[in-house]
Every structure is written in C-alpha cells, then in structure tokens.
Length: 469
Image (tube, rainbow, N blue to C red; front, side):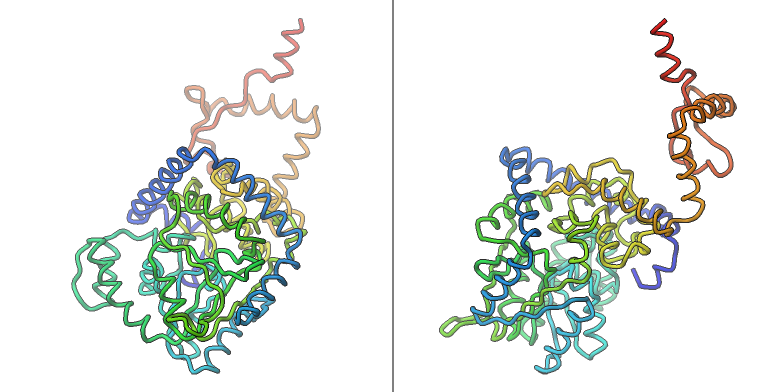
C-alpha cells in the first residue's frame, strides 16, 4: 500500500478489500490456520493461562520503572562494547541509522523483519540516501519486490496467494517460476545468500531487550536473523522503548507464550541472543553493535489511556481472530500497524486524528483480548478512544449529534418510554419473520449485511408490572 492510499477514505479501502477475491482467499486460509494452531498449542499447555497473567504482570511492573530498566540496559550494552543511541522521534531514529551508514561508507544493508523500521519508513530513507536495503525475511522480501507495505505484524505477505507470489517472482527475477512454495523459497534463498555476504550493515528489530544482561533477543523461524547479525561488519538494532524486560527469568515466560500465540509453536525455530560486538578470539559477529532505543510517542502514553498498548508483544494473534481484519486485511487500515492493536498503536504514533474512522473498525466482540498473550483490554481502550474523538471534536458532527441524542434518551426515562412506543409503530412495515431485514434511507447501513431484532412489543418495565399484578 502506498502513502497516497491514505487519501482514499477508509470505507472505500475496506469495500475494495471485500471485493478482492484473491485477498479473501489468502486471508481466510492464513488466519484460520493461525487460529487453529494457537488453539491447539494452548490446549496442550495447561500452564498457559497462568503464564499469560505472569507476562502481563511483568509488563506492567516494567512500565512502572521503565527509566530504571532502560538505563540498566544501556549500561550493560556499553559494558559489553556496544553503543546505545536514544531517539525521541522516528525522524531521530532514522537520522541516527543514516548517519552511521554514511560515516562508515555503507552501500548495502540487509534487514531482518522489524516493524519498528517499517514504523519509521527506513527503507525509503536509505534508498533516498543511495543505500540499498534488502529485506531477508521471505514475507518482507516478497512485499519489497511488490513495492508494498506489510499487511500483518508477523506475516507481512499474508494477503498474497502462492500464485500471486509466483507471478511476482517471475516478473521481478526475470525467469518463469511455478506456484510451488518450495521452489519459490529456494529461489529467494539463492537470491539472498549473496546479499548476506556483500552487506556492510545488518539491521534488525528486537523482540525483547534484557536489562540486567544487556542482551537483545531476536525470535525468527527462517534463520535470516542470525545471518544479518553475524556476517555484516556492523549490526544496528532498533527497538521501541517498551521492549525492555528486567531479566532472563522474565524472558523465559515470554518465550513460552509468544510463539504459541503467534504461530502455534512451542518455541520458534531460532531464538538469538545478541550481546554486543565480536570479541577477540570469536569467529563471527559484527565489529560494531549499535542499539537504538526509540520513543516515538510511547512515553506520552505511560500515563495515558493507551498505556496497555505498550504491553504488546507484536504476535499478531489479535489480528487473526478479529472479524474485521479477517475480512479486509492490513492494507485497508492505511498505516504500519493494522488490526485491533494497530488502531491503538496508530493513535499513539500519529495522534487521534489518524484514527477518526479506524476507531470504529471493530465489533468490540472481545476476541482480541481473549487471544492476546498479555490480555490487553483492547475493547476498553477502543471505547475510550472513541470517547476522546467525540470530546476533541474529531469525530464527524453527525456522529457526535447522534450519540449525544442517544445518551439523552438513555438518561431520560420518560423520553425513553415514549420513543420505545414510537419505535414499535414505525418499525411495523419493516418487520418480517420477526426480524428487521431492511431499514430505509440513512438507517440502511445497519441492515445491509445483517438482520436486527425489532423493538419488543412490551418493554421490560411493562412485563415487570404484569408480573407484580
């Protein structure tokens, strides 16, 4: 999805996604599989619920002393020979990486998937500076070739079928390829292997950063993360400040629940612990290690309504179960982060104006909270976000007037009773087989894709009075 797509209204982007049969096929296949694997993984893991509670407690306790743990992390990284940089904004983080690359004559960068680098649009900045970035995660490599943005936190190319990937590879790599996942993977591996050997800089994100040891933790399933962190002479890790955790003991808790929530695995194929640059006598590893700790709007929510969003492990479980995401995919959201948690993160990073429409892209069914490995109360925060949009007069005027009127009705018993009786009369032409199937004019949107229950013939108060008699 391009930046220009943001100018297209969200409703139009959503309708476009709903009418894309290839997208519907890809989304249904992938999200259903992720949901099934997650369910099976936790069903066979009786400690799962207790560990989810423990992980939530760790996240909250860490946020309460975030400054202490970040300082401890920085001290230990530098003790091990690394360098720590602090970035208040995405622009600063991007500037630090560009400066490091330019000062060291870097021409080719290999990257292991990082939502933080997507957040600051790093690839575009590197290209503009004459530096070639190459994504080495297969999903990210696919969307880089397609010149698109990720549509899922852990499965960037979830919106593409194998047929579409084969067409893309055939066009971009100038050779006919069959729609066979093994063939396509082998071709990608061959293309990327030389890039690992030629690159001067490797850039990664960080799933976690352990404060008391100065360890950056990377969790992958393809092994590319280890090549990115060991072969180039410079390794740069970019992390959001909320990724810090106190100890290795705490890390064990997250390693137990994150893979199960994300992909249904007991443990990911590769868990890489990075502790600074190569030391004397070691055979591999970078000559320089740089850790960039980025704020970019996060600290402003430590005492804000979106505080719990800082617990997020970026597992993608809430996207897989969300009835809205499963229908429209990630690109319809228009920003780096999609799905239920993406709405909250977008508000955090870009302000409430950015989610004027997105705040309502949720049924508030609660499936996201049930799936979240740290039990983030996403529905509550979405409701609070909608309240802020109303209070700050960001929501459309018609919407604000409707909800103010609705609130007035619900807090005025006499008015509620009168409108209830009126509703029974007005609905009669539209009730069929006990359901409201097609409301007229501006109410049509409520019944375009569903039937509604009609206003009851007798209110609860009327029925209660009968029982009393």
